[in-house]
Image (tube, rainbow, N blue to C red; front, top):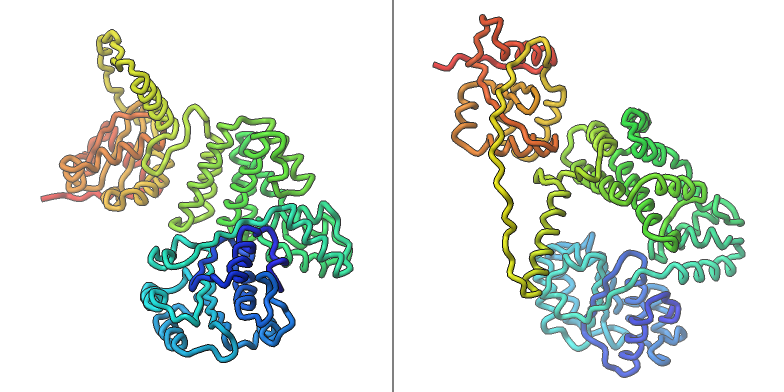
Length: 518
């Protein structure tokens, strides 16, 4: 009803009150911040207070005709526009036409445009023309959760107020007050859990309190967990415990079980990231438990997992999960994507590091950054930087290539998976690898492409280098590469080892097309 009712935003409410008291309000305001922090509420209070017939220290009196009509939503001079559903140029043109008319009952016409970032570029341009030279009887209040989407030309013409996330203790205090007014029994731990689940948003906290009240007038931590849907999350901890135990089979089995139950795997991946983040927070210090949103029994499992691993491993696993989450929108089979992620997590080693989309290990990046830091420190101290000369060791004698033994090798089972990665990173390269086969023998990687055309393309382009980068990044080691065309294969030569690769590739449902090029 008034600025005094707004929680945890004194830096904004005090400024607005003082402006209204002094009669020095701006013609346009921009309210930004996360959801449920009071942006639209403050806009409505400001619109009411600036038009109040008897304001008191910048606060609306709540008794005059203007205040009562504003609270009832029947005041024609306070216009609220939802930009999400009124984002067209024509909608803003209608607004511009209305701006030219003087207020009917109030001193000012106040336009509150919620979710203003949803306006189209044309609509923003139309709004800009009005905001550049606004009539003296008009004020704009723009509210958004995504200020980076608002053009700088609009932002520069507004007074910008950034709403902070509401403090947990302030939400707890407000919930306790409301529970008392509504004759609800609210446990202290339950109020704290609601506050943490709301993520700094008072609206979300009140909504969850309302859900809990529908369960029971006596609200405890079990009521909150049931209403918020955080009960029954054992599957998350089962997967993470299997990963930390390097039990890929158990992790995949649990993922498949959830997939059969129609669990949204993208949501599952996000939930796993959240729990890994909780483990990271637990490992960062003893006073960090209040930053974790979970039930008491879940906290015990998290603490046990945190005690059995190290921070480098946790950070690496979070990175792998985030990469998986980023690939989900482009993945044809999300179940396989998450299974691959589980296998990578189970085989992760901090010494090896994770491999980025560019094929570069984060460990390699870290080593490079360390070297650059040492170089900068040496230059800052004025010490000449000289390259340490190391004795040049004679090159090792070349190792003779191991001849294929048709009885001891098989085509790569993961070649299909590698092809998927290649198609994602280099679609043009992937198209030339259709119906190809591959094999690894020692430090050599053998690839058979479907035709002489593809082989010649490899030789006169950078495709071979790109292929090496992806394959070496996938396995975390460097291979020697040998390329063949299926046209080079003599199908009558039974002793030719390449024939054996093709036969085994066919047995693994990898068709190699044999074409005669004239």
